[in-house]
Image 1 (cartoon, rainbow, N blue to C red):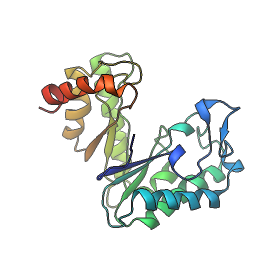
Image 2 (cartoon, rainbow, N blue to C red):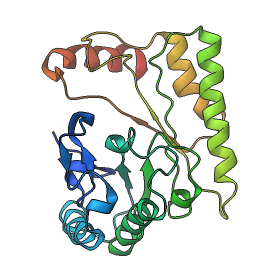
Image 3 (cartoon, one colour):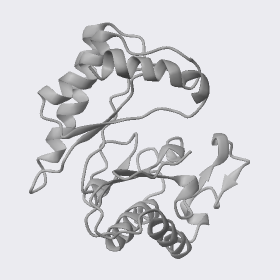
Length: 227
């Protein structure tokens, strides 16, 4: 599976530098030291440079670049490791931006109120996934709140940061083969962002069971979502 396209590039921890994390969130399986204090920042940046120049050889390419911090979620809560963890994330951003002139870099993360990251970002990537039990109205208001918060943060910068929301078209692509958003939820996650003036959407999914899911994805794109 490739995360590197002509318009968007996603760097996950396991393919970007030497980000420390725990495999399967298991404290007995540290990768790259597991925590920032056990990992060399200079070594991380050296490998990150190789990753960036390999996957984005054109310095003038103007697409989107995302550093996805999914594996950090159980470990990074509320800036848990203080200034050293801040240094690692911010240094990664600064280094990446030096290597490519026009790419829009940012972090896609569960921690939406970390201004030290936003200060190094060129774009905001809020997540508006729907995978929880709630009424249609509650889902609508949840997405609305996330997008309005993104817009509030965006306006703190001059010029305002572009906003590209992470969304899905399937409720649980990791476990289910044919479980697509209903019309109400498609309206909530596609039409509503457009109505609020969001710059664009990034439709995320998983490669798991893709051979079985692909015909259903094709049908939904052609007959529902893409109409």
